[in-house]
View (tube, chains in turn purple, red):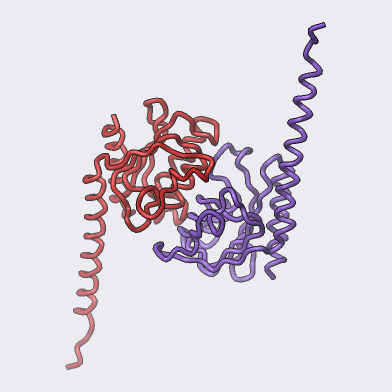
Length: 165
Length: 165
């Protein structure tokens, strides 16, 4: 079942990538039903808060009519950042399933273990590594393309410039 | 100048308290002008993301047309929680000024020092303790009232119940 829902999150990540956004996607599941789905939209909205996880949490609160997202599982393709891990705690999501680790900013296992810190008033069950390769490959190829495009633009610019001859 | 802007954040916190919300307020200042102000609205909106800091960050992005809140200072009455500290990092706010510490969930000095962790791609200048007493007293008296009301309700309920005589 985890793989089925993660495939839906991957679909959202692909939509983000197609729109030129860093390809991260999430779905929020309530009692085996998807109640919210979202892609990372930071560049499109120019709103720093519009990570995929934040958008499904906001929609989930609307759907359930409560800031407490009881009986839900959040599926996300990448290990949540500090903001999203914090939002997961704030909304009391009981279970989080993620794909690939984020060694640069991940706050579930990589830099902090924020979802399992008994000093906070909430802790989560966490499952990692579901469809990790597919989730990670989306990001790797996105950034590879970005670097190649940058290189091509640089070369084109150099070709346009008059030589000193 | 810090005290003047913190007074504005306190005004927002008072509005939250008047509405039955935990009294926390924030303002976002861009080049000496307030561009966003907000009260904590979690109960009113039933949206876990609507902490005062999040609302001013969202409005700030709108006002500046960018997810990067350059040349801004965030004033908030209470030390930010993990979600809000993460959102401050995500929106690249260069300076944060807060009133009272939050020993239970604060992520700037109390439980973590997230705004000064060189592993993240952003760090902030942080000033704490501006109008700390006023900021803290708002919270103390709010929770004192809450406990008293709870006690009164319990007593009223006991008086209503028939005795076993």
